[in-house]
Length: 193
Image 1: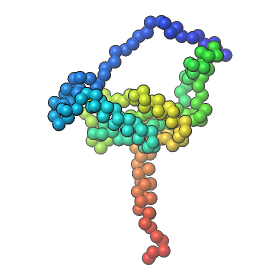
Image 2: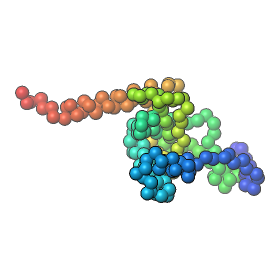
Image 3: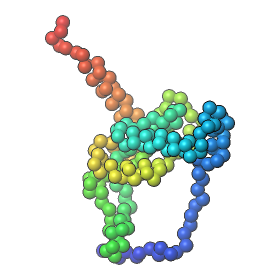
C-alpha cells in the first residue's frame, strides 16, 4: 500500500485566466444585431441562455443518441468508455485513511462516462471545423456523474481504437432504420388481405 501525502492547501496556486462569454460586449452586440430584444436586461438574457443550455444537457442525458446542436454545429452525446490505465485516486478517502485509495467505479461495472462532441458527420460543413470544441459546464458534468451509474448500460459504447464519427454515425443510422421499420409495421395485419 502506498502512503498518501496530503496536499498543502495553503501553497500558492496557478490560476489560468478565464474568459466570460456572456459579458457586456456580447449583450451589446446581441442587441445591435437583434433590436427587438433591446428591452431585455442582461440578467434576463443570461437566464434565458442558461435555461436553454440546461434543457440541452438534460436531453443529452435522457436520450441515448444525444442531441444535434442548433445551426448544425455538431452532436453531443454521452458515451460509455473503458477505464483509463492511470489510477483514479479518490482524494477524500485517501486523505481520511492516509493511504492511496483508487476509485474503481463498481456501480457501472468499471466503465466511465464521457461527454462527446462531434462535428465530423454533418450535412452542411462548418467553416474551420477543426477549431470547434466543447467543454461541459460544471452542472452538466456533475449531473452526468450522478445519473450515469443508474443508466450506464443505455449509452453508446465508444471503442477507443475506432474513429468516433464512424462509430457514432453507424449507431445512429441503425437506430433510425429500426424506428422506421417499427413505424412501417405498426399497422401491418397479416390476416388482412
